[in-house]
Amino acid sequence: MTMSLVPRLSRKHEHFLFGIIQSGLTAGIASGIANGHLVKEGTFVLNWIASWFTSWIVMVPIVLFAAPAIRRLVTLVTHD
Image 1 (spheres, rainbow, N blue to C red):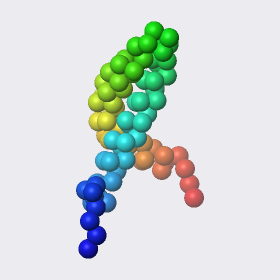
Image 2 (spheres, helix red, strand yellow):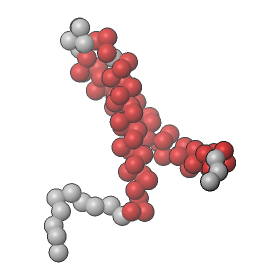
Image 3 (cartoon, rainbow, N blue to C red):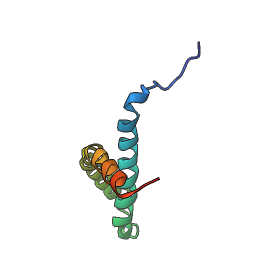
């Protein structure tokens, strides 16, 4: 028996975890780019964190609910 410091989720929930991580990464990059002009003012970090968190909270449900529709669309427009 091996012990893990990080609790493991069932594979049946991996698409939720993927969506949460993907939306967080995307929101972080986009908000960092959008707030880049604040580096000179010295307020970048606080503004970036606030922007990232707000956009992540909005994007998580969009990514999770849109993913099945996007998968169906991609299946329709591609072939083996």
